[in-house]
Length: 529
Image 1: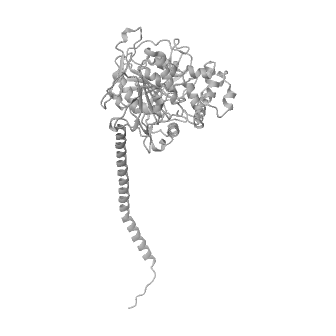
Image 2: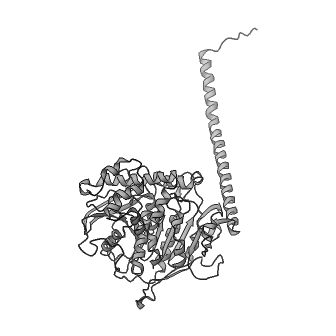
Image 3: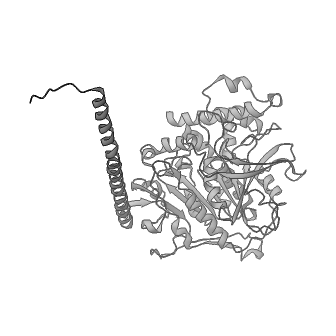
């Protein structure tokens, strides 16, 4: 019998396709399972490598091969440096020479400072920076499980001073550390207005509220919306032990400028006005602390030095403080990348002028000179605007007179300073290490990496790690305060006009969620610094 082979009919082709499709579908679960197993294996290997990495780093730390964050302080001659001992003891007296009633007004920082350790995972290479000055330096080496290990984000680590700083300014933090603020706009005696953002909302409505208060000062052209501000306030205020108020300098964070007076790097009189208003909202025995970032750090440190033992703020933290403004100017002009930052900061300041100020009130300023050069530096802006409005003889005089280094030796309350050696905006040479050694109230933390207001860790979604030592410090100081008796402030060195006269009134109240650097708030080449 002869078999005739014929070509497949259409129905046969359809059957073949159906069988093929069924085969593919049946193999799909197998493919997913294999893919999942591969992902699990890769993740497991990654976790094992990371665990081994941390273990090896811990061993290296214990032998001193890697260097942790340097903590410098004048804390006596305690030779007990065991792993369970107190790492740093800060005993500072707020007594004045003529005030014998303050012998019990002593602050002490105890064992919780053992977590004030950030590791940069770099070989010791900057030891000469400190040893060349023949200063007493205390290095703390600890195993990772006992300390906060700072492992910079890998893709920000290579050029940390550039990438971390730019990411700090331009990164998307809209879904990170969201806070709800209640804004009060106060009118001060000179007619100007200052926007104060309170969080949590309503926390200052009851004068009997015993929660501690943190006064926060932002950086240049910043505000309460900045990610570095929220990264500290969010974890701190969530504990129900703290409440905070952010001083938004005039023209910043959407506030209006109603007088020719602008804020500047030494505007400690603005802080005094806010403190004067704050006294009406809190009980006399409320514990008040302060934190400042960048320009705000200089303002806070300057205030603490000017007020000395009579400071209303009982402890402080300054992050990325420029300290010496003239040295900062020289630093910003020492290289092309740093000059870029200088021009970016000047651009931000020009935006504040164009957005909120009626130039008819500023006849003293040469507007043509201000806008004729699109690449204007921060020094040139200060020469045209800041020095002129402050009626000072020169820009150098403005820098030197308003630098917090001028008064840091007079600080009589505990002050923690955090700086990074690779900060492209702040010169490490300006950090007052000698004053830190001679003044028992100062503790200096210097990291090798971190940029300006950076200190990011994590790979996919980098987050700041700097809030950990800050919250440790604030909680330690708050818990160890022996007494919070208030005293009237002494006459400050550069007291602003109207500080003793006139009333401070609330002219507007509003609430809202502050997410990230809104375009309405920040403009310029680089914002958020």
